[in-house]
Length: 196
Image 1: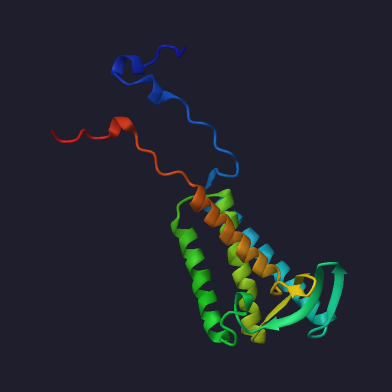
Image 2 (image 1 turned 120 degrees about the horizontal axis):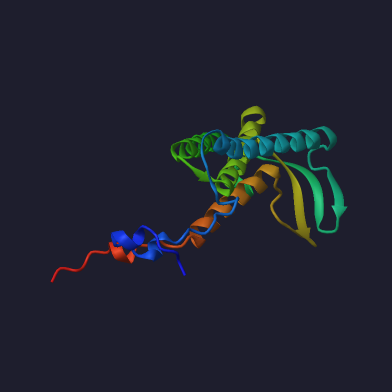
């Protein structure tokens, strides 16, 4: 039983005063410096890891040289002048412009949102870091270094890199949130009665 309270004297339903369930740390809203840390921290980590692994591959393996790790997975040094899965091959300038537009769009979106959940900020961050990582390759080398080769027998999945993983993971997290988000709930007490 709810104890007597002020709602009993001002005409409100006790149901309107039920406490909200506690938010999980992952979905708790962040603002200000905390939001920036959860956004730009993962972005910087992804971009640095991506560039470090690509630098190592360029230093240790010649173009087309490979290093079998285990069945179904090989480190292979290849370059790509297109986008994901070699789309828009040779359109390096166009892809660089698109990358800059995506980066600006992500930063502006995060800045204009007063709060972001931790997972939202992190998802946007890894997407941002992956985009920056591949943009650096396009601006400096005119092509992107790929090296992660997954294959089954003679069939090979398109070779990719750390930035590609981050981009796809960020997009997947944001898409999953949009798909699974419940529709906005409307308070039945606030609904207007239809005109008679």
